[in-house]
Length: 105
Ligand code: HEM
Image (cartoon, rainbow, N blue to C red; front, side, top):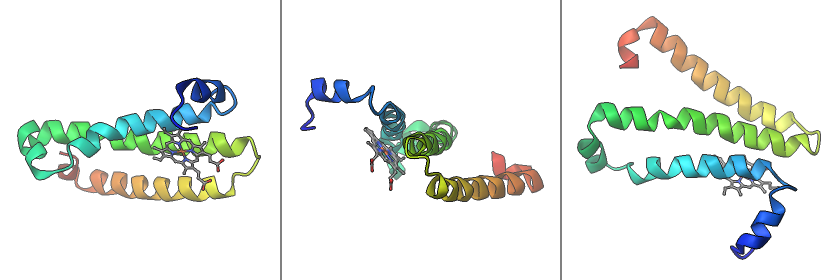
């Protein structure tokens, strides 16, 4: 769309799921901007970790973005694979934290 804002704005009602992708991208920017060792020192480990927990929201938004996009085509097979992988990884983390709560800190 050649970064033409008017063209992009006219496309959004046709593909509202793109807004969810855009929100996910916006949330990733501060994470990318602080993904180097000095940023961890400057923010302090606790604040850095709190900020970087946004990645869980990004993962859910990305799934929603993908699900909404494929809902228009009534094709959920690939979305289900992505969702299952994320559910497995998060489930595994939750299980480890429940076993040793010190890992949550
Ligand atoms: C400005 C931000 C974004 C816009 C405008 C956008 C828009 C789109 C559009 C239009 C499609 C459909 C493409 C097609 O019809 O084949 C799509 C697919 C997809 N997007 Fe995004 N997106 C954005 C950001 C993101 C982000 C940040 C993620 C992941 C974190 C993401 C994950 C995906 C995935 C997994 C698909 C499906 C790809 C496939 O069919 O193989 N998007 N996006």
